[in-house]
Image 1 (cartoon, helix red, strand yellow):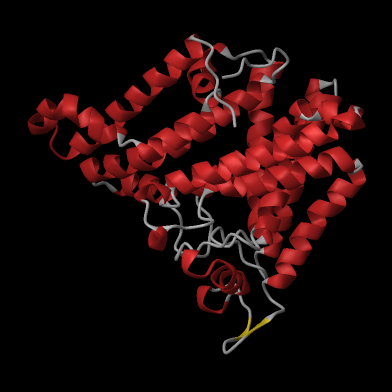
Image 2 (tube, helix red, strand yellow):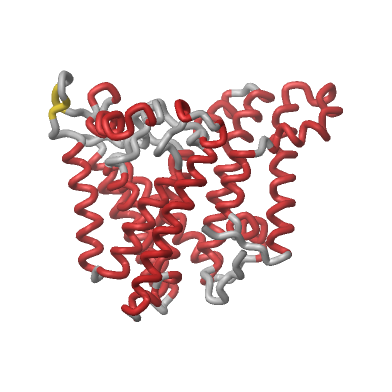
Length: 365
């Protein structure tokens, strides 16, 4: 249990809460809404809150990159003491090791089938929290040891190296790697490295660590800007410039190196990071520049215990729990009953998070 820092940037906490709201509620909400309404409009909404089969980009695809982006944005505020005092480096390594292990452990719990206690079903690397662990460790080391220009070179290097790894290697008995599932080097490496503990999906994790790191670095650049630039209006303008450049490069690159979330392609990093910069600019402008933050208390409550919200919703079926109370509404709500239980389940989760917030209980990893 930790107390929040007094010099926290409100917009970062609230943006994290917005992202977590999308994770724990949005996809189920719009899916059940369409189940009830069955209209073309609700179908379009539900589609935007699901992932494409392979190629393309939908709104829901921004959720995981935004999580990594926000993690990167916090690093300059939480790790600055390690850049100022080299005597703290041992504690830095211990902190990174601890967080890396805890994030992997939580990832094993929520999607790695650890709680099934069946080794044949265990998955080594299969979760957003584990992607955060990789991006967080390498980005923190880059922040502590590298100069700003070298961090930018690292960002570019991650994108270029990963892009080349997706198109240059020859896969045994298959041929040249491409950005499609059956002839993809990143998937081949995952199968090779993880063996029977591979997650068995089209998502990639091992080589995608280069993309996870690049995404977290993009958040770091935003955090450094916010921390060092005193002119808040200039911060907003610079974030918008960063976003425009990243999004433009990603869209241009998409013509020859497709945007694919499942393998976290380099163009996906650019497109998603561009959108993250725009979101950061909007939230920073409204919350920290214009001081309009009372409306966002709802999101702040979620953002201050984001990891708790993420893990507990993967372990406990809140909509089903809500159904134990709301089952009497089933005859009156028809096809909308599923939506009612999703909203009720989220209400239970929010009450828990609100109680933790009011009691200053902030669980950090």
